[in-house]
Image 1 (spheres, rainbow, N blue to C red):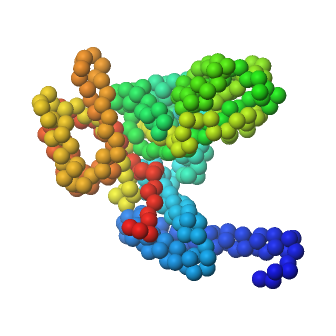
Image 2 (image 1 turned 90 degrees about the vertical axis):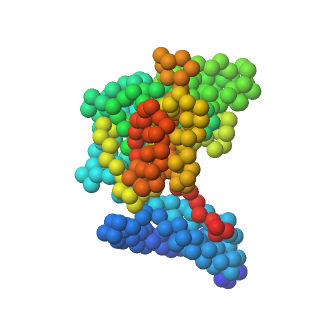
Image 3 (image 1 turned 120 degrees about the vertical axis):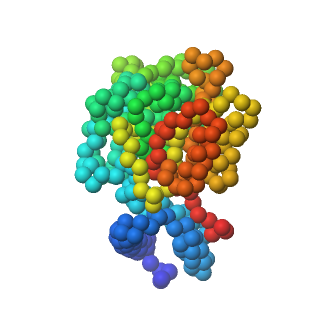
Length: 384
């Protein structure tokens, strides 16, 4: 390329290349649709990691020859792989429904809450419009699903900063619903308010979980009075009722929705702050075997030494990955505990069935909470 180009000419050339990139991605997406149809006909797995590694190795090599950093190439291709896998998963998961163009969904809070954002994103992936049914508490969400008031419920169940939301697990274990999906939402907490209040903020409103995830920031500002709200929506509504010395902990989308300013970004304790939401429904339709799944359950062990270890041996021997194992007290039975467990795998896989058989030998009770498509997509590496 000529070195005597003007700045406007260089920008124009970059814009042309950007258009070519978008055109190439669009053509690639079209071919992914063809692969999806072929996999549906043959029952092939959604992911082919060896193929992804081969593509990534070739791309990194080509980038190296042209002076493109390997990190940039890997970031780009991981994004392409993830978009492709997500597009294919939604055709095979337990929420698949070709006729689903509208879904009535219960969630905590109202417009602007993290649950509202999660619900929108879950069904946007399935090209469905959300008919909102905001609720004041978790029990109301479960009841709405059980009583067929709504089609689905979207509920936060754990966070990478504050851990499991025990109340949700306690309700889930005793409900007549099943987990039919999950969604991972990256949470970027901001201080939201009116710009005129910057520098003289005295009160901060937020949902208890949001405030707990910002402990470090709040403790470093002793002048701040914390006020708990039933939801992020309610916290933002309090700002509308209060003067400009009050702020709320909320996300950028919520601030935009309520016409508020971002006074400070990244006030959460951890940069990698991710909330896992579950989608609950009345009926459990198993995902197809082609999609990577997670199976969730509750169990109580027999009152014998080593019963927990013995109960889990089948999963170890079959190479099943336990992604979660957590104990919860049994209400009304002092010092007795139940266990919540998530494992990678489809309920109908032979290795899962064998492992469950061993589990049954050493437990008093097992309750299946759901088998559903995983939302996390692990990255392949050229070094593997």
